[in-house]
Amino acid sequence: MPAAGASASSASEPPLLELTGVRAGYGPIEVLHGVDLAVPAGSVVALLGPNGAGKTTTLNICCGLHQPAGGQLRLAGRDVTGASAEALARLGMCTIPERRGIFPNLTVRENLWMMSQAGTSLADLEEAAYARFPALGERRGQLAGTLSGGQQQMLALTRALGTTPAVLLLDELSMGLAPRVVRELYEIVGRLAAEGMSILIVEQFARTVLPIADQVALMLHGRIVDVGAPSEVEEILSASYLGA
Image (cartoon, rainbow, N blue to C red; front, top):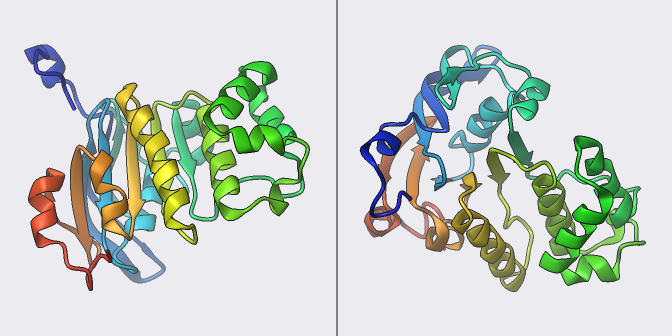
């Protein structure tokens, strides 16, 4: 969220990530029907909605894993519609998928070493990882696939941060995790946001992400039906709709 003294020029900058009129589907079935979504620089946007709303498809459009049938994807004002996932990754788009995105047959340290190929030294990656998540340091020689679900998510988040992304995309960070672990992970995400990272979070359980979000977009049946500050959108949240 811009600081109180932000200049008019910074306020007029294009969103760091923007979808306009995006349509997409699978075969003849269209699941996104003209989605408009923007992530301003340095902000956290939560994309909320029930299962089947189109949230993950939207995220896959953003990271190049699914190509839109219409509309535009822009990164810092640049039209990148149709770019591959590899090209978008080189431009700073980083995704933590729903299933965590780690190498289960490699150790914690080897997972971090894989990220050192992006240019950050293994020593620096380990120092940052173990400072944020001491449990990973205690298990640096353990196979990632044998970690708990929460520890695997910590490792996935650490690996993503090793690429110094321009935009961090998170898909269902809370899935299958204990509430205590979810709170810990979102505290880390909140600190990243405070440092100025731009983050788009897809989440089914709304109230896990509302405390750190600058803006909330509600999705239903492949359309954005409401956008606003968390305090505004929370008034229309229903436990049966988005989950408590």
